[in-house]
Image (cartoon, rainbow, N blue to C red; front, side, top):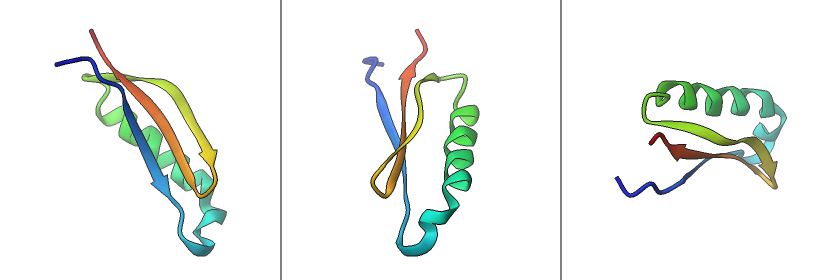
Length: 59
């Protein structure tokens, strides 16, 4: 492993933007699933129609 960071995002199409909370839950569930490999460096934030978070590998 090289120790690269990963940006994971959820893209909201059309009117799905009203379900921001569900997008946040999906990202947090993903982070929970890969907990043994990496940890959340930046919690989910909105940027336009995307919600993203940044993950870093565990040492």
